[in-house]
Amino acid sequence: MAKFLRIKDVMDKTGIAKSTIWLWVKEEKFPKPIKISPRITVWDSDKVDEWMSRI
Image 1 (cartoon, rainbow, N blue to C red):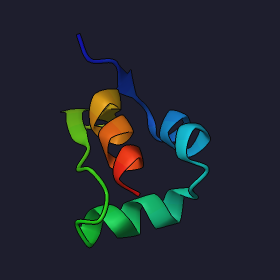
Image 2 (cartoon, rainbow, N blue to C red):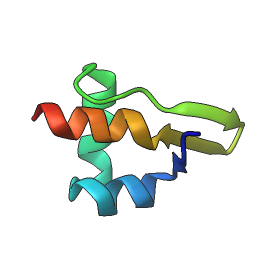
Image 3 (spheres, helix red, strand yellow):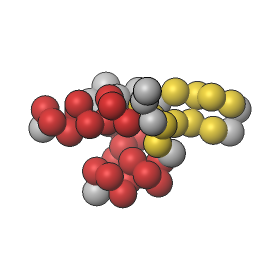
Image 4 (tube, rainbow, N blue to C red):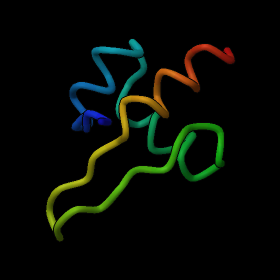
C-alpha cells in the first residue's frame, strides 16, 4: 500500500525546495500530486521513489 507524502515530506526526502517542486510539477518533470481535499495535497511515495531512481 502506498504512503502519501505532504510537501514538507517531499522536500525532506528529495532535498528540493518547495518552489522548485511546484515548478517541476507544472513542467511535468516531477510526479503530479493528488488533491485529497481543498487544502490538502499529497504525493504517492512510490512515484517519488521511482522519480528519484531515474535521476
